[in-house]
Image (cartoon, rainbow, N blue to C red; front, side, top):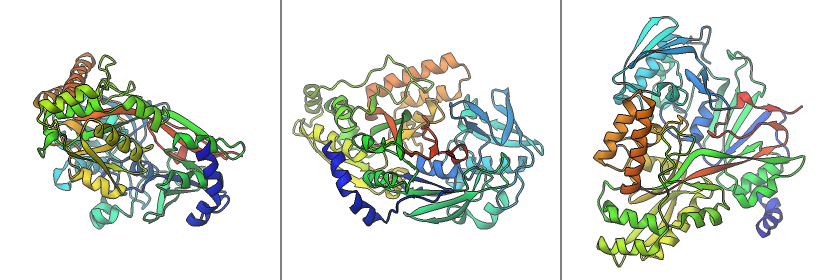
Length: 502
């Protein structure tokens, strides 16, 4: 109650400091995420804030509907010809915002661009996987993979946004990263970094003109400022609301809370590739046992998190409820530290974003506090989001870092391959047994066998501790009363599906 009352008292000061006016434009939807995208090249990122902006400008071959089912988008249908050949029928009459036509040649260009390691794209899932894309006719393609890949369709709901080939070839990657052109429901207008990103309706969109004519994305790291903007109706949808501020959003006639268990997991990962104490499995196990995550979720998140025993939520294929979370046991932690030769502890840095996830910095600080109780000299360093993601892609967050992963392929491989397979884009861990299980799960078309591979992988992960903890995030959004929208478990903010109440 005190925090809520305090916010009400300081609201006028917040409005003055951040220039928020009472009431937003009638025809404009304003969405406040915690951070800005790092790029607008839809094939060169793995971050939800960028996905949420890009999915409004670009189309993929397939999509997830609001009830998380796979459905056609730029592809009208698809089928598996054999274990390594997928055939897609493409939608006719679709044009890019610059007038280029969408057809089979476009699909071939984009997927082979993503599969080419020379492009150095961060969406590396197709590198080493796609052998080639064959054009059967102007609106039919076949994607041939080098090995069986059982959930290509799920991946194509997430990645593979289509870019216009001539535009990419003429302008180059640096230009398209800040001047995007897609086939989607909204066209890019301008991007004022760290201020706002403006989109306007594509009136010639192949699914029909969007109901909302203008969309603005604003990066606002401070949750109190996002809430203030919602209270004044300057903002329409705000993300990652701290639980103690929820009651300020349930304001009849002005705004409401939309809350849903997310498919996102939040975790504390180790970089074991650079040596030091965390290269010893006993140290990692000790850290896992030293952290009282049930208490931290209860106190820091006010219960808005679900502690997990593996990297998967129950919504992911591969989830096994038999694998339980690490036991909170400080005595066992001290014993393991002594066995590893660190009875007197060691310096330990936890890197963290601030404002990207629900109370992320506060979770990192609570973790550091737990570790200090068993003799580890733990501290927290927070980073601006763009800098932080550069650290992630550059593997420069030693020895530990807090990160979230929203695996909206809904398949276990979509988490453990990029985050735990040796040498992958965001992996700082290596284990031959786990690598074998990941490879087996990724290439087997039998669902029962795949489930066994992921269950076994979860048990190896429990033993080897690449992550000290994992929990499922509860997504809490604030929504302007004038907006027809409710939260999705995959965190997508699809403006084409949103409307204003009459």
